[in-house]
Length: 250
Image 1: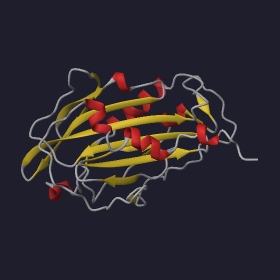
Image 2: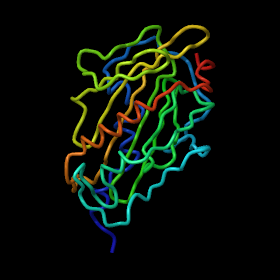
Image 3: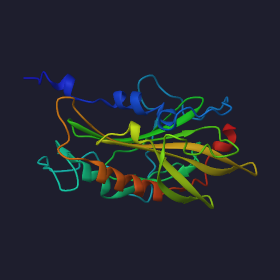
């Protein structure tokens, strides 16, 4: 007999993207200003689905949506629901191939997540990796503006510094807006320097790690420690993308 609660319990990927996907950057750091632009990238978004899937993970282990044996229990480092636990995000990591895309960086994602998908509009590109056990969704969303600014936007008055990373020969501050966080969600943002036609431009980039459970359930324990550990690894793995197509988007 179908579970009548399923419609209420499941947090669908489209709902997560609606909340933290295409508006992630603005939501993380407030109004960004900027001069806008008419840039578009190669992949064409489709209605209600990802524009492209990364299936070229050469030299790395592919992620998988099978993170357990179906009998998960709460762990010391975080809660669990279904087969997934928060600690799964802070386990192994897999390189994300961003070559040939208008992304100025490349990074490593938690290996528990599935292959990355890419969506874009005229202002930003969104990269999403999801693991779904039928009850719990683990999600990493990375968003980047397609047009860089001549100076960094900064963290703003409502954000606090989460970390600093080395990127493109600069020490880059990473901010977090605690007002937008919860025990199951961590959001950070930064300005990544990248040389475009001999001039350094700064690309506002946002990162969201989210543990989504049904509205009638909750994660057993606070996921904050595991989310922070996974986020720090993602940020520390950042490096410039030598094969970015962002130059053609300016």
